[in-house]
Length: 149
Image (cartoon, rainbow, N blue to C red; front, side, top):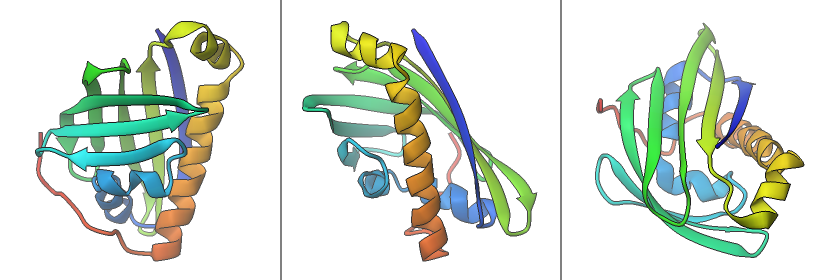
């Protein structure tokens, strides 16, 4: 298993950042390689990805979700093995630190080499930068799910 940890500060209130993060179907708008996410239930999502020509499909289960604090997940079926958590930390009324921690199991030689070269870390960092641009540019979330898991 490999691990990546990245964080970013966004100029929106914690509720805005959290609410946007709960809108999984918008992830393709700021996550490179994510082609589509379907919200199957409150706790189950189906992902379709294409990273450097490698297509994958998998299901991820939300294992913990606390409004304005954290969203944790693990894959439960499909072609990817990963688990992670995103936490939201209030800096002040208009600023939030978003922290992402993810464990993943590279599959095959190409993914293992890519992991060793820091590809996943750079991709996560870029995804967080695009999330910042997305939510700061909008100023309001596209929706919200305030339930708890």
